[in-house]
Length: 193
Image (cartoon, rainbow, N blue to C red; front, side, top):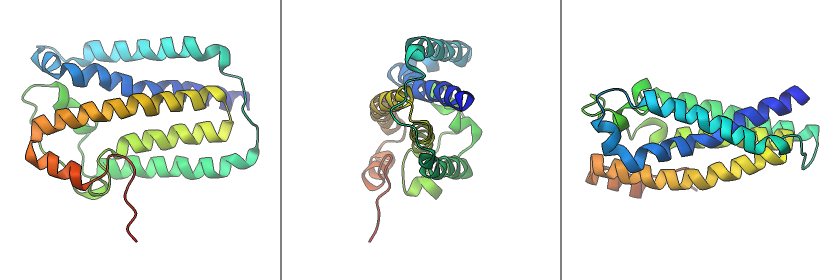
């Protein structure tokens, strides 16, 4: 069980820094696009540094349990599956370059079209919802206070990141994206009755 809790903590550390990684990109998109070399030569080491700092800050609390109950792994398993399904559906109409953010950071990148079909006809940011499902699964299953705290942090920074990303996409795609944003929710799909 210690291995599983340690794995949960490490994965939540990594997942929780994803919004912060994108917060480095979206406010400075022109700067990253103006670079002659790939911005990822700077951004990826910085992101790995974020993992280390987050791990160092949260390490003292990585064994504190809010609860311990084997039954929590049942809904956690459903959340894991939901996250994996969202990842699979997200890739169906999205290239690896788009998933990796190349159109955001590389000037003149050839993949510059708005994808609004498939899962993106229901939610605008399915990958982020997949990340959230995975973090919630680890938090719920392990009962670790640190996983819940990292999930809460990711929700807050993720909300900021989505706002910045929406602004950047609106600049890139204009009226087409504004209409899309009005019609399709960011994270929580609308339930039709």
